[in-house]
Image (cartoon, rainbow, N blue to C red; front, side, top):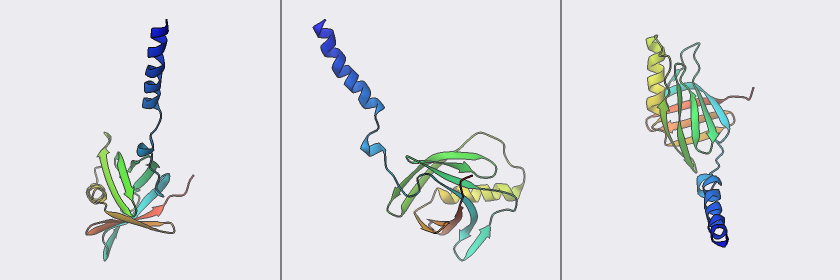
Amino acid sequence: MKTSFRLLVPLAAIALLGVLPTCASVYASELDGTSWILESYGLPSDLTPIVEGTSISVDFEGGGVVSGSTGCNAFEGTYEVAGDALTIQYEIGPGARCDLSRIVEQEQMFLATIVRAERYSIDGDIMTIDCGERVLLLQRRQPV
């Protein structure tokens, strides 16, 4: 009986380590728990407003998880923040496709831009994501 008890304690400790979060896997940023709606995108000197009647959302859920909607399809992925540096990776979920070419163009431009995120800044309720040559301008979405 002593032998099985001696094995049980270390095995239980190892099992608990797999369940408990580690400091390295939990990283907080000011984006955690925030939600944003795209207002415009494009070259900083020539921003394009989103197509009327559409909504593109970006939700930074915390723990490095980002999700949202392009107005046609949902996306989910990861984000990392280091100072003002921001990187985003995503995958598009299965779902309906849009038929209107303007909405499809907008979705493609948004997705091609956000994956190139380099930096972000927040001024009040406006966030600018710098994606190299292009930017995304987002409005903070108020909790419902």
